Every structure is written in structure tokens, then in C-alpha cells.
Length: 167
Image (cartoon, rainbow, N blue to C red; front, side):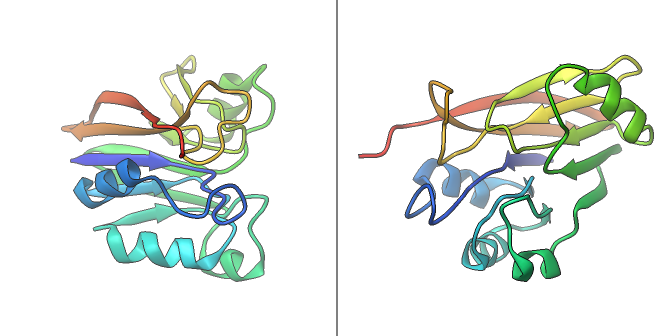
């Protein structure tokens, strides 16, 4: 099962449109996971129309319309792994411990908010993934998103994709 993980798309606040590479990989993915901060409902509509399956949450910058359509936390079983999706996890210091305590029933937690790509494993085995942002790099060298493969209870081929600069 092919996954695409993204967050913090911030359209149209940070970009007028989503990157072509991201859209191509959305079309190829079996499941798309979005960890919030959509900004407008048209972007959610676009993801829903292009994704075979969408697992998504709202973020701190998402208004009432998105909050009515999306949960704060999503949970789903994919390929034998228990995934959770949430926008905010707090400060980087102590993140693994806090998330392992908050989500003891998960194998993988996908989160956003910081725009900083993150891939660590907490004591006890919870994998934490932040795909960064495909439209707003903030202090990072590149805009980013993740792809991964899930099969028989194993997460593999977790790849960070750098988005080419906008022209």
C-alpha cells in the first residue's frame, strides 16, 4: 500500500496552488494522509476528488467550515499498522515521550504544524512522522512531503520529497 503524507498546505495563503509533484504523487497513492492547516475548503475538496482514500484532520489555522468536516484526531488501520493523525504535538523537546503517553494504542503518528520534517521512534516503538510543508518551508531549506509503503504490518520506504522552488 502506497502512502502520501502531507501537512500545512496553506493554500491560498502561502501558495496559489499545490506543487505538480505533490499532485502526481497524490494520484499514485493508495492513501493520502493530511495533518491539517488546509486554510480553505477548496483544497480539501481537491484532495477528496483526487485521493483514492483520504485520512485528514484540521489544524490550528483552519476555520469553522473545515472543522465541521474534519476531526481533530483521526485513527485508521492501514496494512496492519495503527495510524493516528493530529496537527499539533507541542515542542520538539520531549515530543516522543508525550506522544507515546497520549497515543499508546498507535504504531505511527503523523503530525504537522512546525513545517519541520521529522522521523523518529519513541521508546516503546511509536513512529512519529512530520512531512513538513509542500508550500511553506519557513526556516527549512526546502518545502517537503513524505511517501511511504505499508505492507504486512511494516512501514518501509519512508522518503522525504523536496519540492522544487516555485518560479
